[in-house]
Image (cartoon, rainbow, N blue to C red; front, top):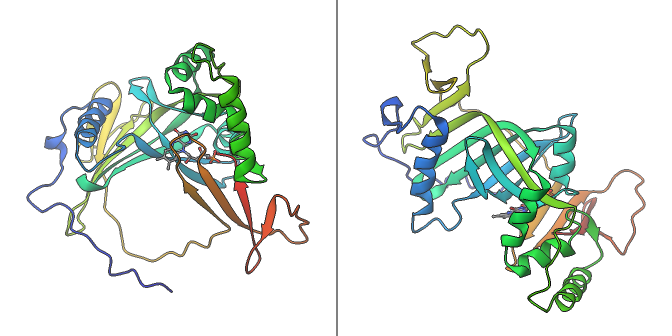
Length: 289
Ligand SMILES: Cc1cc2nc3c(=O)[nH]c(=O)nc-3n(C[C@H](O)[C@H](O)[C@H](O)COP(=O)(O)O)c2cc1C
């Protein structure tokens, strides 16, 4: 096994902890804003709005990917995607989700859990047209998450669209399969890493109906939220045994590269144009970005 156990970087010092008195607000959205503003103005953080979005099928198979948060307020956190993608089909059958920001130079992360809902067509259309034309065409050309024959097929489709919309005055219609989602939080966890591993974890959660709280542990905050300090962790090892790997590389024109390895199913007959046999029972497919 590759030994990376010695990889360890210093986090925050014991004189720089994060406790209840350090909260700028008892409103978790305002606390988020305070940390987010620091992250977005940090010279070593290029995309402070990049967040991991975890969804799951109804029967509990999880999946996670990065998306860009495109706005937030008390109604929730927005992102935009393709309604035919894997994440969207999981959201359709199970709207529960989790998002997570990690700002490595600050040694801070925010984990949010909640439910996702679709934003209105009008809102998505307005946002779609605010994007650069190359990104609009990138989204229009791709049936996100479907298996495709080659990068060339994606490029051909994209170039056809560039030709069709070469006149800058010609409006690119928002595809019906593209739009926005809103994550509506029911909890926020603010985490700050300490070098001695006594990390700080403050969790806001919505107080349950008629819940009686212990004031030593649970602190009443604003607008129906309560705050709790969580334990750090108990050490113990786990092994994740993969059944798929996706290698993703970002392109400025949004024709991102996605190569997925997955274990071939028993007796599966594959189409050699789409599915390439690899080593040790794995197959490789190119996914649409
Ligand atoms: C930093 C970063 C930001 C991304 N932002 C988005 C985004 O805002 N919307 C999106 O659909 N995909 C975005 N992607 C691509 C996704 O990670 C993912 O490949 C794609 O949404 C398909 O995911 P799915 O097959 O799980 O639905 C981003 C990837 C990275 C690395």
